[in-house]
Amino acid sequence: MTVALMDVNHEILDTMYQVGTKLQEHFERRGKTRSFKIEKYMDRKAALRNADFVTVTISVGGAEATHLDVQIPKAKGILQAIGDTVGPAGVFRSFRHVPVMLGIARDMEDLCPDACLLNYTNPLTPLTRVVQRETKIRCYGLCSGPFGARPALARAFDSKPEDVEVLVAGINHLFWIKDFKVKGMDGYELLKEMVARGETPKIDPVHFQLYRVFGILPSVGIGHHVSEFFPSLFMHEEAVEKYRIPLDLKGTIYDYGVRDRVLKAIKGVISGEKAVDSLEEGEEATAITLIEAMVLGKKTIFPGINVPNDGIITNLQSWGTLEVPALVDSLGVHPFSLGQLPRGVAAVLAERLNQYELEIDAALSGDRGLALQSLLMDGYVRSVEVAEELLNEVLEAEREWVPSYWFEG
Figure 1: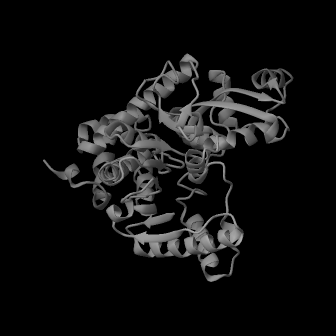
Figure 2 (figure 1 turned 180 degrees about the horizontal axis):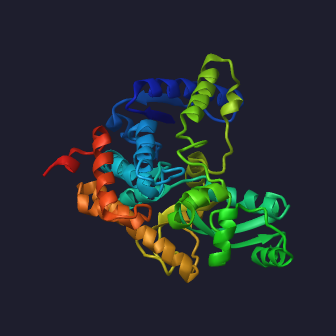
Figure 3 (figure 1 turned 90 degrees about the vertical axis):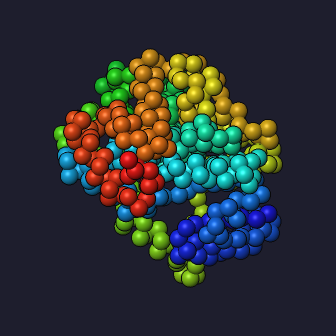
């Protein structure tokens, strides 16, 4: 077996190659894997040739571009939190990443057409969708979010994660808890009883407010992503203060301080100052678990994986990319059929899926009219004039990371 690492930045590539070699030696000593080799490439096509699985974790423009995505709108009074999924930052991130993601998939069609693409990169829904829409490559989006629902609900009911069963349905970073049980009992009935007794559930207050409105819980266990999908409710100064929502990428993987700490930990492993064990993570949400299920026939239920709808949720667009539970085995990925979502929830998700489709169209064409529409549908920008200014300023600031067709004509 061969693991081929590829990056356009040789320093990052060398660093990951070195830490990968350390991990390889560590796992072989512990008997957790058979011998395999690691290769490194700066040529994408060379890395892709004859691949069986391709994982994508890219960042076009890196943290620098992500900070521009947040800082330029902030100068116009637009507040954003994580900024990698929705909001102007999410829109502009799509403009940078969609063409590159499609380019990877096109190369796969030429060099490894039977390979499976596993996407981790945000904004995960539009990037997974563009591959599913424009190519014949099997593509699935992976996120740790749905794996956090069980422990979050367990905390809310003073239980253990193994006592909780949960069924999620929605889109990445805005899935909803369609149903859940605690020790075999109906979770929503328990929640209603708790509220009726005047008790305050141990649930993020933003999530609880949305439960009060829609009747089901959104995305418990994933932090502040949910607030970003409802900018008129939560992305203004009063709400930010009330709900203590961190802004400007603080504490996220795009925070320079966080990135420095991660890089220091990686270099510590390479130098031998830190144990390799310090880099091991839980196996639940990893591509490795999915690959093992498909290759070795280890039947695994993923609480959430991003797949084409195709009738899974009957009151959402059939073409939409959804985050839903699925059984994965040697025959592939088998999403659960989930029926309908509550009408209000479906309306929110349907509008967002349509907006993502506009983002993709704009990103692939450089059509500024479509870009303007996607910004205005997003809900953060409150005037056409501001949207036009924002579009021009961010594209100019990020000119080196977007296709040249944005500046033609």
